[in-house]
Image (cartoon, rainbow, N blue to C red; front, side, top):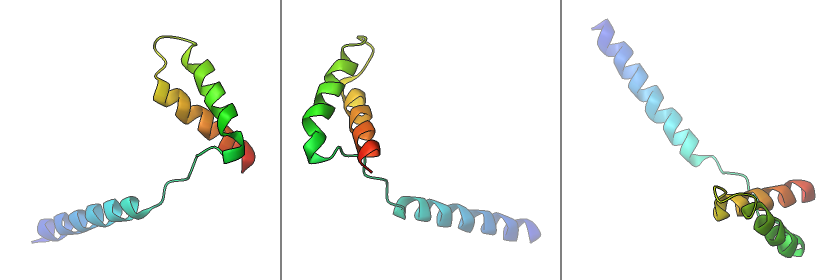
Length: 71
């Protein structure tokens, strides 16, 4: 009986924490409109550093950089 109670509490806790994690908003790392051209230029430069650099990751990094500086 004790094992069932502990297992039930663990299950409830797991579901509860996953629901809370899903409800949390992610920060917005979009570059401000006035810096969008500069962010795109930075993303292009980052993407050309290596063939292993993925374009979407370079864009995310550039947007994050400009959003962090602006914020």
